[in-house]
Image 1 (spheres, rainbow, N blue to C red):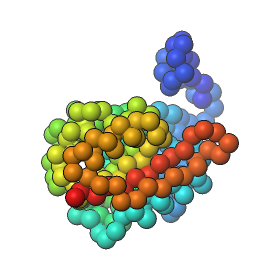
Image 2: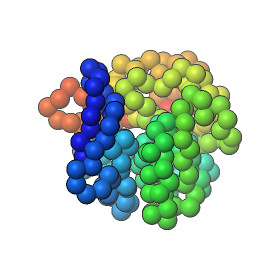
Image 3: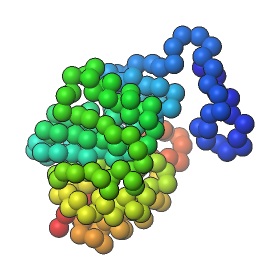
Image 4: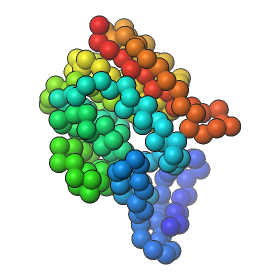
Length: 208
């Protein structure tokens, strides 16, 4: 595929997508799950490293949960990987193509108790109903939108797992959560891209 982009920013802004050969998606496997990935779906490029990262996330989940929210879910990777730990999983992602793929992936993997919603987390979360035991946050480098973070806090989930690709915004969001009733229980760091300054940080927080 060839993308045409007339924007100066170093970002995925596609004016036009040209399929030069083949199809506009690929399949990738993580653990025993299959994921359909479109050009606009976020998916970790280091697949083996992603298994390590998501394995660490899953290791922080104790017993079975009634309901898990997977916010900023991309193609639903984390939500599906941890779905055997919950009776119900719901994900939210702003990119519609990613949500379509996420729901297709859940069907491919036979996960009828997992569903994904398209929309900006800061808007969709206001209308989410339910009482999640666990909220998983995996936001972009800009962190969780302040309005979304308020709603996250108001759900009073017993636990939050925050997966961050940017320690600077992680600190800001963790400061807010710890000021509103949460305590850090564990922190793990995964060097997903060795020989670069980037790390993925996984933090388990528990409501006091």
